[in-house]
Length: 141
Picture: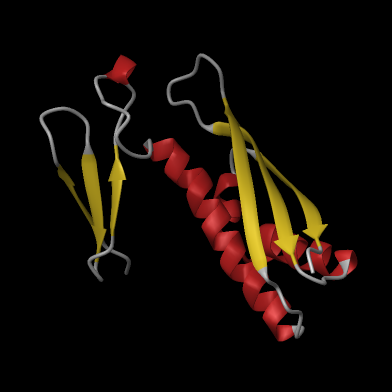
């Protein structure tokens, strides 16, 4: 079972989440909600989690294929349901930039396997959002 402890670190909305290994993440709300923008907003954490989850998958898949990945950068964007409470994501898009001498077909396959099959966060987001991706290979020898 996964366990995360949260505690408030100011008199407003700033929270710190701590996992069982002592790693921390700071969350806060917008000034309009009474926060100070001093950390991720909780819904931003979902997008970051999807990017991190997919990154682990893609790196692992390419490693198994003996593809040398020099770097990976992912931009994740999301659109939320307008005027609704709660306001879940309805559209999520991840753009993967893979650096190295990588065949585009292998890159696309690795990302498709991650987003479509292995990434638990993407599979969770699929329940309310259309999850899409794009892939760019940058060979900067």
